[in-house]
Image 1 (cartoon, rainbow, N blue to C red):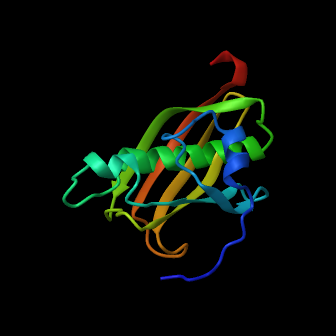
Image 2 (cartoon, one colour):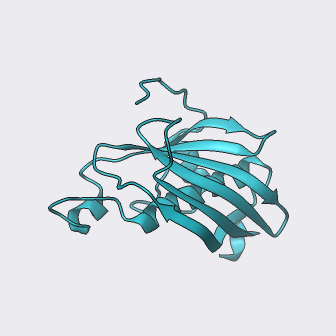
Length: 156
């Protein structure tokens, strides 16, 4: 487990202006790494027992729903697209391939959301993404390839 302190590159207030999501669907708390030259970003989600989904998703043994981990990864991809210059567009999920759920995610975990851009164009993007728990450099808990459309912000 890593105990490194990560600098905040993009904070939660900035993320709220980048992404169109609001509570409780905004699933990225901050960005701790951003490498635009290599199309990489790492977001972070701190999970507490107060998350609404833990109340109903196996209440006796709460785990984060896998689809919400995928949504958090897709939102991180949307932040990367914004930082790559598509700031007048919103990333809308199109397709998710090669999904693997390897470990459960529990209250108290810190979710690290790793996204690497494969393709960015004016109409869409494709990324490889994976989430780790409690350490940036550990084995993925969830991984996927995600495609999204980039649509004009005012068209939604």
